[in-house]
Image 1 (cartoon, rainbow, N blue to C red):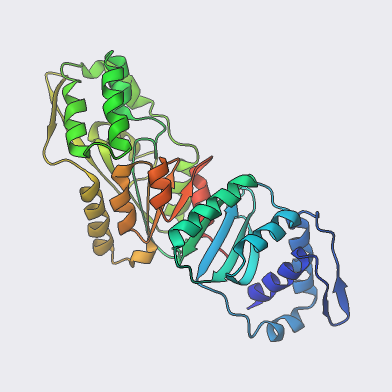
Image 2 (cartoon, helix red, strand yellow):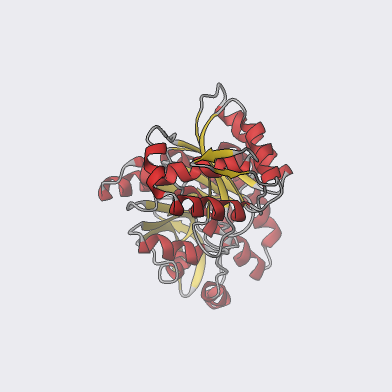
Length: 356
């Protein structure tokens, strides 16, 4: 209740409106940074605590959120954001910073109905980008304060590279493999078929040639901090990849993975045979892994998040409570619940550490 009132006070301040209570009046300039405004609002809460609870009894927060992150907000942007949100019922606005490494973000508590939410989310991302932000509309998001499940893709999500492309580069067949990879990630070629085609081109490659790649996988910015934060809050971390177990096993320790699933390359006499053993971890298999793990852990769907970058991740993302595109292809960003298109994966905390 205190938080709700603080949000109401802050909202009035940010809009450059005059708020009068117990003889105290605020009227602030539009360009004052939001951090300064919220500091003043916090002071008001502390100094007038006896008034806060009574004033906030009727405050009701929505279950949906519109979030703007990735840049420094001021009152001019806030007013533009409120004009953009328009018909949405804004219950409160909060400035919050879920980690010291992250810039403060704006969260609007809203209760709104849209005829075409997918189209609205696209407009929201465009509006945010025009102002140097990223934007997301989140409905009943997971809470960091409760145990949950993060299931992640590996290539171009947990790590910066596509392992199969880098193997091909070392073996001088990069152009052939990369063209097939691009078609698969864009949804123009079935994943299983593309995997078989690409792996076949790796026949005869010695493991010694790619061992250094395995030993030095470039982690995506912020992934270790994200995983550490989630583990501290009793989250389970699972990797479900269309890549290969030979690389995934190298990520288990640095990312504190509870489990990993990926395709197994056939190896004979320390060389790749160009074949894949067992069933393929494709789009449906990733979704099945998420559902299976969620059931085993007894988690509600709302407390599950799936992150990925390619078309092969969309089914898994749809199975999760929240599916987040990570530096994703346009098709993936368009169909995801939310997206992080730039910067650190630690920004995922913006979606699960919301002020409620």
